[in-house]
Length: 173
Length: 236
Figure 1 (cartoon, chains in turn green, yellow):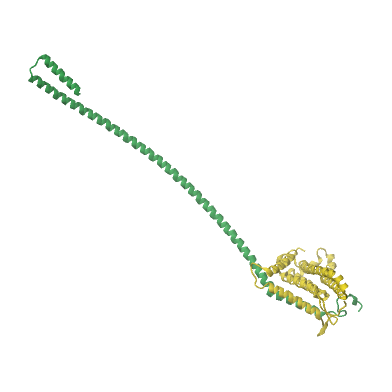
Figure 2: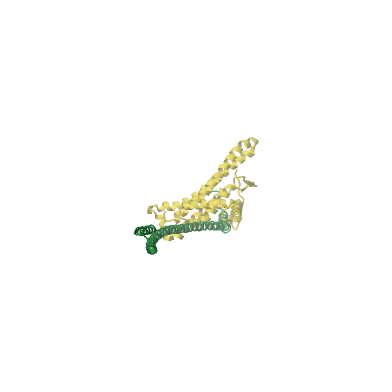
């Protein structure tokens, strides 16, 4: 043929239809076989891994959010507890103040009352003592008078006696 | 250096048995690697599973750089299979070539234009198919007169040019690599001096060919995704 020199390959004057068919059949067959036995499973595994990683990331994100939430919660709780504790201390202080006031007031009142009682007692005792002295004076006077009456003594003696008695009474008083 | 090919005619269709065999070998190796690597899959990957996942992520990166994952996810399996198949196919011709009765049996299947053009045409046909499927016949046809209607002829040529360059780039790179390897091997087997002279460039060229093979596999998949995204994605 005229264009023989343009034809490629070793065959020369005829086209290798058989080679074309063989190439097609072998290549397509190889592709299908590999798809079934190699690429398919491998892609499946890779997809599986991708899914696994995706879900792991999601889980991690979720747990991160959860822990964030818990931390926030704990923080609030701690804050509450702190305020509460402060309140309790404050209350106790106030309570202490109040009872202190009360105790002082009570003590003051008690001491006042006791003082009063003592004063009363003293006055009572004094009155009692005075009346006792008086009775004593009267008794002494009576004794003196008896003595005067019993002994007829001089006016001077009498006066001296009376004076003596009075002095005695004064001493007693 | 000029080897024949083991041709066989079945029902009036010519088969290059070497191509068929090497395609099968490449497919078998890829399948075994992938199959063994994906036994005992675990959520925490180890060893081979890591390697497979790296390839998957690599192809995923290629797709993502071209289109939305929503559109491109369906091409993931195609991309991984393509990159592994082409890489393994490119590597097959490196260690040795086997010639039996003047027929070249062991070589890279991608060093044959029929094979690479078939792959390229498959990709381009897929791009048209998904273009119509995802954007509707109207959206697909509209793609030919965007951004300017007078670009229509260029757009049509582009489709054929894409197919041709996609297939021939791969074929050319690998075939050229094999030719040079064959030449070096011929030099090395000629004499003791030839062996001494050839061993260093041979090693260099084999290392470079590994690099080329990897790059070409990557480029093929990258361009596949580019062409697919042209037809499928909305932003083009």
